[in-house]
Length: 273
Image (cartoon, rainbow, N blue to C red; front, side):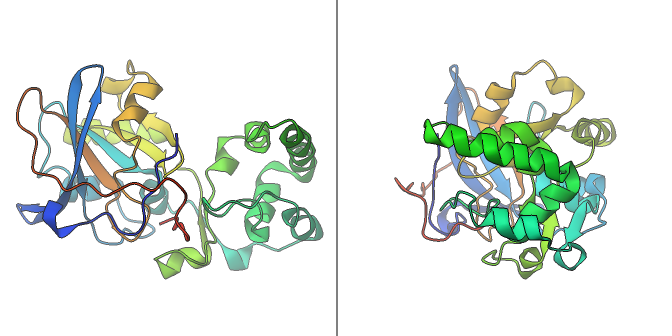
């Protein structure tokens, strides 16, 4: 179920600081009787080529407590891995220009109606598969079934993020970020080096996908992990909070929290930052 918000989630009433780290209370979620409080950690703009272990050490380790689970934005991990594509390196062809005119347009963000994004999908998967996915998707939409295109092309295409002219961060106007490479290994590296259980997530206002998790979380169902951050506490604007700590607080009182009111419709401009 989609949960939409308008604007930046970083309200001053929810702001906290500890050991030089700024974070924001994001409220409680209760799953199967477990009370989980979330803390969104503010960082600098994490750029291509940075060391993800060192970034986690800098921002998450000072706040981490035993039993915490850290949710890591897939975009940040991909930036660290430099798993990106510049728009100038994507040669736009006939099929991308043509097919993008018929792609479903959504208020929820940029999809395959962006010709460069569609061309990148063609480059990754080949034209025959993309054509087949377009045909199947169009037919299934006639019967009220959506999402078939992405079911056929796969998560790596669905996870392409960027080429978004309305992003709060100018760099993403002409940069596409791909899914992180070997996200389970990324989480294993972090847990081995820092003792922090974590998961790499592709989360937005529409859905949450668990792309990778630490060895200590391998027995947790995807649905349980996704429910921890179902309301996308990292935000979708210019929050710069790509890391979220999820903490089981038991019967302890929760931190004072001023909630942001959710919308019953997509915001007028959704940012993919």
